[in-house]
Amino acid sequence: MTKPFAESSEQNKEAILAVLRDVFVAPGNILEIGSGTGQHAIFFSAQLPHLTWQPTELADNLPGIIAWIADTELTNIKPPIELDVCCACWPVVAVDEVFSANTVHIMGWPQVEHLFRGVGQTLVADGVFCLYGPFNYEGHYTSDSNAHFDAWLKARDPVSGIRDIEALGQLAEQSGLSLWRDYPMPANNHILVWRKMRCP
Ligand SMILES: C[S@@+](CC[C@H](N)C(=O)[O-])C[C@H]1O[C@@H](n2cnc3c(N)ncnc32)[C@H](O)[C@@H]1O
Image 1 (cartoon, rainbow, N blue to C red):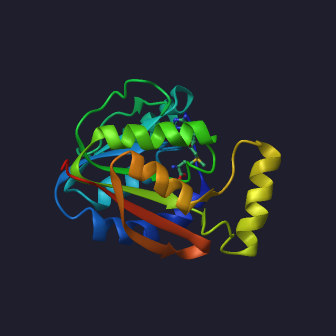
Image 2 (tube, helix red, strand yellow):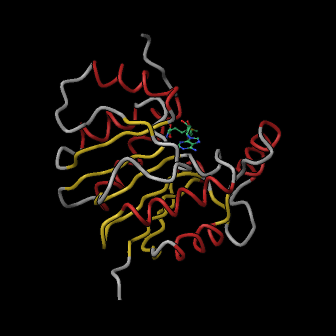
């Protein structure tokens, strides 16, 4: 099949990689949620050979990711598996790190709640969750372009939209995650990094 292509993934991958190099230092298993076309999974697993990358997506998007992987000789990327964050039982356990890009403004809020609950259950203690995308702070857009993007998202799907970091923080806390770092990124995006707290 023709490999799906997203220009945005090409544009943001180098800046995201710089942060992942800073955060994902030790060897480990990484779960990617909402891998999209698979371009990020291919690029990051090639650049970060100490990680074993597990792409996941909704069923309809798996063939595209398989096509990207088939064109590589990478040994540290696994075949993609179906993961809808709403499913009660995620098909992965005890992962060292989770990465997701541009997903929480696409999902409805109940899906975002499921995402954080699942990440909290799936990460090992001290594991980290990196979430890339546009976010609001104290209810405010960080740029006019994000305000326009949010209006565009909501016109397309009223349940979608740019999320408040404070609301995500509440979900994270309920899931046993503590905000560790916040990296400003190009084009008014951020990478939020939470760490799974150890049980008291
Ligand atoms: C804007 S795309 C981002 C894709 C890729 N991460 C990127 O940055 O290019 C959002 C992705 O979230 C996925 N997604 C939406 N709802 C989902 C759900 N309930 N569970 C898992 N993934 C979901 C979509 O299939 C889509 O590929």
